[in-house]
Length: 456
Image 1 (spheres, rainbow, N blue to C red):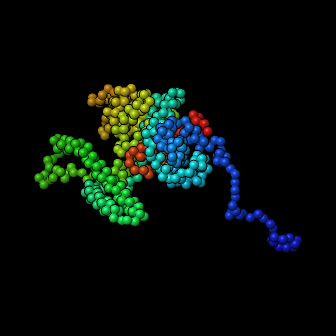
Image 2 (image 1 turned 45 degrees about the vertical axis):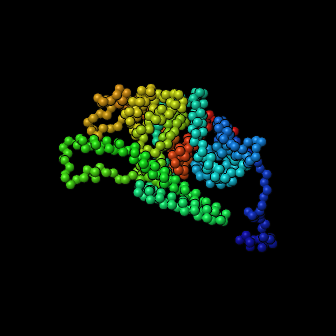
């Protein structure tokens, strides 16, 4: 062995440099040296510098010549959230930790102290500004001729809501919970006024605030339930009246012991106590969960997102016409072709798009009768719908439709890869803001891939 050889020749023990991981070090290094010249964080910063941040600066209340702590530069907050979205980070607490630990986030923060409260509040408060910047950034590419919007594709994606399935309650239970919450708020207020201790008062104030917020959520849930029943009652009544006025041919009359109300009565509706605007939807795996429906419209040539929306309607059937009108309003331009899957085959929407000058490229639904050719016009079809049926039978329309999967489906996949699976915010307004962050981050990376952006 080595030890016996060393002893034979009279050598001592070998001297080696051992690891000392508890040794303190003082290093001199600037933040700019932490990132490579082509690092994606520099691309994000270059993109943010091209945005119109004037509305964000205008909302700052800390002004020169006045007392108060300086505000955090909105450019830093926007860049951090865009890079975090690209990186698949959707938690303000996690982003706060990354700003202390990882070089790209430290570079973007630039030594500015942050906390997760500031990050979370900023993220959900910029819905209107994000919507304007999504339009403005794409409109700039339209003016330069880099984007045409001649062929666009639309698709919807269901995203899990923050609410759990167990939070859905019926009207009777909601009323009971609301009454108990109001009683708790009153009791806590009385207890707060009677307690002379300041520390205990602060704790009691936090309990009172939590109880009041729960009361507000329950009241909102009941109001949502009232609105659902008010809007859907006329349609249900008309459907029931039509069914009773004209029974199907060959149907036997109801027996004397049959209650028609029991035959047509539907289960009592339920609303979430934590997110009243969420709805139970059928997901991609076939299960039913509380969710929202995000709508994307993508330029088929560049895969850049031109318009987004978020609704609490599980079906895509009624979403094509509103998104078409939104696109025309944003860019004062009418696309030549509109690609969408069979879930958007709404005859009224197809007629509306054709009247506006856009050719819908949507698969024609198959008939239940195999002897009927769905591509043949029907006597009740408007001219635009009849032309759509015949056009979709041709090879040119089928070849054009293939571009849908290569554009909007890719955008959907990028959303999922970046963590757009379940929302961590509540309410449709905040959820729509998260969709806008993802859309702007997606366009940022697509612009960089297409060579429209250069690192700072």
